[in-house]
Length: 122
Image (cartoon, rainbow, N blue to C red; front, top):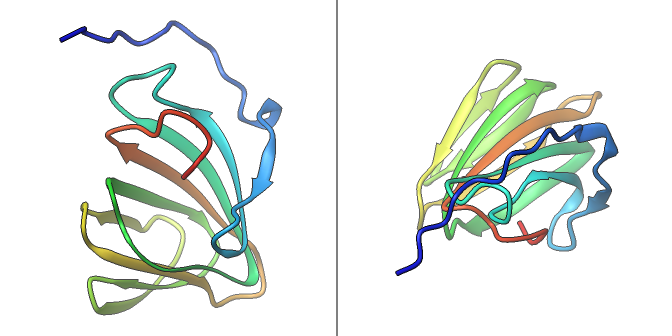
């Protein structure tokens, strides 16, 4: 087995391309760190616009989602919670997760995925 090592890098999030996630509604992402840079995790900056959502899906990896701003309705493993800035969601592999913007401002997210996604395909 080949051991992978992190690549030394300084990454500016604002310089990363933003894209609309094809499987969700009004959910935009920037891939900050992928498995190509760090074999331990991938890191993504997300934004859910008003009336947007990460539709219910089964998580394939562990997603740790930190809410930077905004108000969201989270359904994690069948439990619904209203969350705001400073809340952190840990969705283990095989859990069901949805996250809906329930406010008038965008929901800004920082998303860590382990093991990492190799490229832009969150």
